[in-house]
Length: 156
Image (cartoon, rainbow, N blue to C red):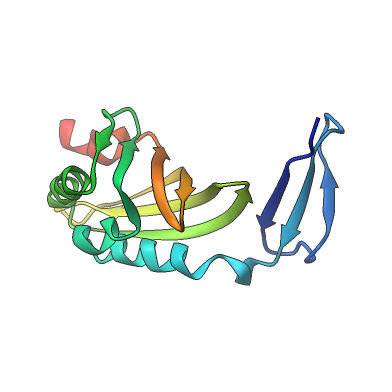
């Protein structure tokens, strides 16, 4: 069985430090926080600017996008519309990248997202994004988040 190498981007972990997993069959190789890929920072910057057109430029033409427990959306044009509709439901958002890992053609991002509602209340939610990459673009974009707290205050 081949070992899986994950490149951990985490503050306080020395570059090149290897942490064995419990199975003993895989190892995690860490990298410094500053090595978060530039394209990851730029992509989240486009999202934080609420620019769906710029955001989808990081995706393949036939990308699949899944946000939380919502339905999967396929294709750049459909994703751009879905993301734009979501942006219309909030006043703003900001992503804080906590950790980034790479394994083969997959990139994992642990994030803290601060959403600003139209009533100016802020909601901070933990999130994990999984990107399946193809030729330098995201082919499969999955966001693991419980978004319900963002809208919970509206229901009171």
